[in-house]
Length: 503
Ligand code: SF4
View 1: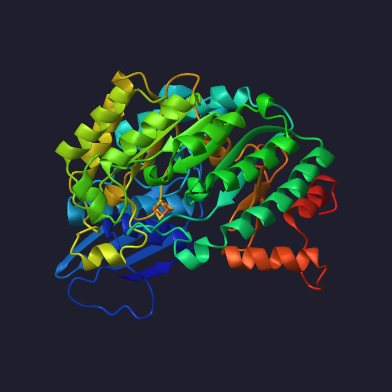
View 2: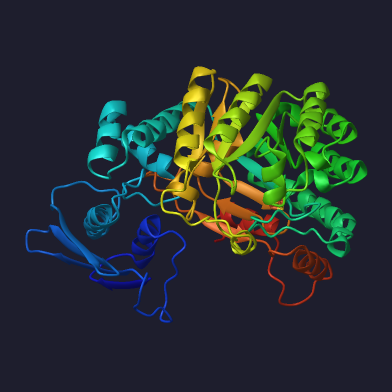
């Protein structure tokens, strides 16, 4: 796609909004005008009254669509007036040219509930917040309702979040095999899987330091989340080593939540879940994504529906309080009939949590090669599938409690976590709404430092990154232990520095 921008507009925002109309497009100097290549121009200027005025045109083959928009000086906006004016003009031009109305209007961000939350915090109330999202940001009424409902539930739960608290995230970036659609840095080959012992040992040493830092800065730990990859790629003894290390360092009985995101059913065994239960895990995820073996094969997920039922049964028998089940709408080869049946069968199992993701085309190469049209504008029946899941959840006693969006999701839909009341995944809320520091350990883990008592609400967040790949993580860990020159301080040290005002 060719994109010309003139004026004070965020390039990233304009590109993301263009992707809503032209999924899968790429931007860059190599793009040449031609058949099937959209050419988009956006101009914005601010006049003497302070109003932002935008003009957008989209040319595709022999068709051109143009639109203008204005944001007055008095209008309150969630981002710059120029971006909002540009978004409105681009949205109007795209809608006319393609006859398609994107469900999320001109919102492109990952965390729409943060916007709804800010409206509620400003006292705008539920109805007015929905109206603003519909009338000024062009969300369709269902999405406006969903996002305000999520924000309102989150707000209630966040009020109960302990003061001066934090959460701990532990990364296990390994999976038994790689799913065809996966964009996650996860290690699957036998040679790399043989590194797990060393990885767990290094992680345990880092956890001693991390929990030590938390004690030093005097914070309460409210949740611990072990995520992946697939954490149950660990064998029972590796899992026991990790969980016992956590128990050595903190009173798990006093945690609000302790999650082991087991994930792939083919890695879940009775023995592993017995270990999890023994060390106080309160929440596990067992993720079939779909209850259709043909689709599982199609997307290269090496387990079967039967594996899922067996794993779910193990989770039930383990006595772990909360079970989450992840599903994906819009998988290649899926349709409304199959997806709605999957949702119905999962609801029959009555897990406390169900998370409905929308298929996200991040690593489409393998799927494109197999001839799937993963970049269609309307996403086939994905939108209908997502709507069905929302209605079914509502009438089955599940409430949406957290959500996020990603670029290039099929049909520009969203990911929503649903829970029975009192069983919401608190870590998900704390992490998504960025109201609590997250201290993270392991390869590719991101620590988020913030001060909960920061005045003004717009908290400064400092992100600390660990090396992405396990072998880099191990090397840095060894170098630090050996006191090698030039190795940056560990996460624990940086946490203490931040909270004791050294940074
Ligand atoms: S289980 Fe998840 S993280 Fe692992 S390969 Fe499949 S999609 Fe990627």
